[in-house]
Image: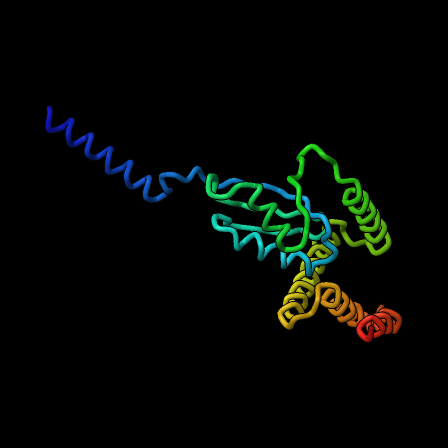
Length: 196
């Protein structure tokens, strides 16, 4: 009987050790926080913020949603504090606050309602199911977001300032659909400032 008890205790200890090794003894699991980002002006900004988050030891996942001006970060509990994440955002040139979950975001909801109304209008006019319109619109939006992000990454890696990278990438995307927004005035102003 005593050998059986010793064997059982030994087996339980081995099990506990393997669980601790697999999940980490001091780790408390993953936590998730959503930060409101201030100063974000385009998809280009999201790259700098995401890179800053991923450089913080203990951060496992980070995504930045331009339309909502938010960053969602998953990190090891006990290894990273929210203050460290806010500081990392600040070092990347932006301000951040923890998003209060009960606060309503008026602008995104208003835009969402306008888009919904447009889907209804197009659905009636062309007899395309609203669901199909939504799915395709989200697909195109995601693809365009990816193109803009890759363009920004390329421009920033070549030393462009954020504003110039944003304008450069926006102009390329708009030019693809036949709309041009660059005019001489901003460039004339930049050239005048550079000469001073």
